[in-house]
Image (cartoon, rainbow, N blue to C red; front, top):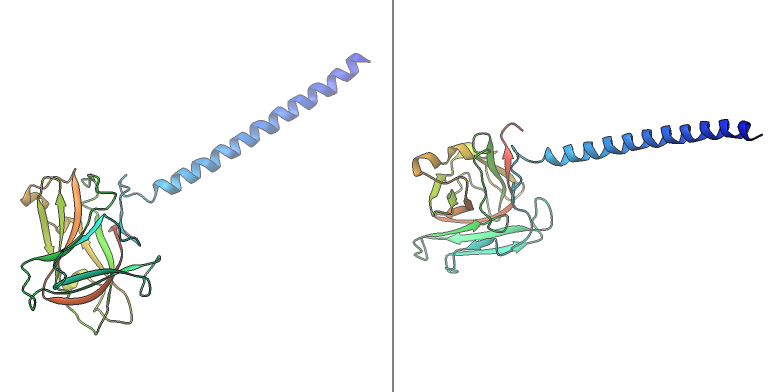
Length: 215
C-alpha cells in the first residue's frame, strides 16, 4: 500500500515544479518588456528631455523689468497638460536693454548634452495671444555652467507656419544650429535654455522639450 501511494505523489510534485517554472519565465519576460519601453523615451541615454510642461517653478525665470516684460501661468489656453506660459513684452517703447526668460530644467542640474546635439532639437508650441504674425522676434540660447551662452536667432524655417490665435504653431531649433564649437561651450555641463526677447510680442508658450530629429 505504501509503494502505490508514493508514485502518484512523485507525479504531483513534478507537475507542480514544471508549472512554477513556466510561471516564473512569463513574469521575467513581462518585466523585460516594460524596461525596454521606458528606455525608448530617452535620446541616446539622455533623459532630461522635458524643459517645460505645466509648473511655474524656481527653474523658470523672467527679466525683472516688469514695464517691459511679464510672464504668467495660464490655465485657459493650453496645448497639453494643465497650463501654458503667457509672455507679453515691449522692449523698445519702455527702453529696456535686454529682456528674456530662461529654463534651468531638471532642477538646475548640469546636463550632459554631448550625445544629443547631432540629432536632436528643442521643440516648443507657440500661439499668438493677439492677432497674426509671421516673424517671432526672439533669439534662443543655451548656457553652460562656465557662463558661455550660444545664441541662434529665430527664422521662418524653424516654424511649422505663421502664428495666430486659432492654432498652436510648432517651433523646432536643431541643437546643431547653435555655435557651440565656435564659442568653446562645455556641453557636458549645460545650465539652462534661454529665450531673448526683441521688439514686442504677446504669445503663449507650452510643451517645451528636446526631441529627436528622426521622428
